Length: 196
Image 1 (cartoon, one colour):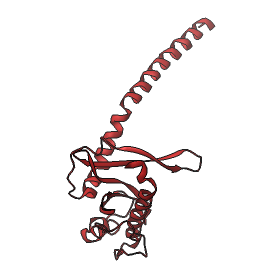
Image 2 (cartoon, helix red, strand yellow):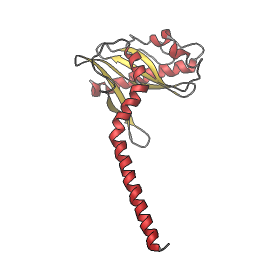
Image 3 (cartoon, helix red, strand yellow):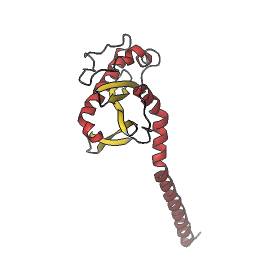
Image 4 (spheres, helix red, strand yellow):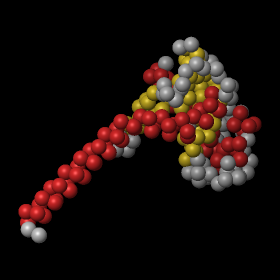
């Protein structure tokens, strides 16, 4: 095989991989929004429905979500958070987004819905966790524990040691949920002007 033939094969292979790599990049860019929508619809939407707790709305909060910059990470890149806005006849009736707390197995993501006109927590639901099945997930399934947040004013101390009851037998998990709610409420007070 001559040097010319080898260079010809390298050139053909480079062009071939470059064209297909470019096409794959275009497909990724073209489908990125739809993939994100489906991920949120299948992972976050069930918790979103629970958090909105029967609030009547006429829009699709997942489709009409907004991303709000809530700060910067250690490298200076913006931290973005999805904000889900429920509307009835064009009027905002509820706002929901995730707060995070530390559970026994890692971070616990909590979807918190807030009624902006009443300044109260409308409802909460866990979105993500790494807690031990059974004992660690018990507080998430207990309606009285999860329901104690509904209707509470935003000025309430939701964190551990505050005004909420801890779930006996899964203290770390319940503390993580309470921290998540407290963090979401604190975040709301900082970003509500960007939302409303």
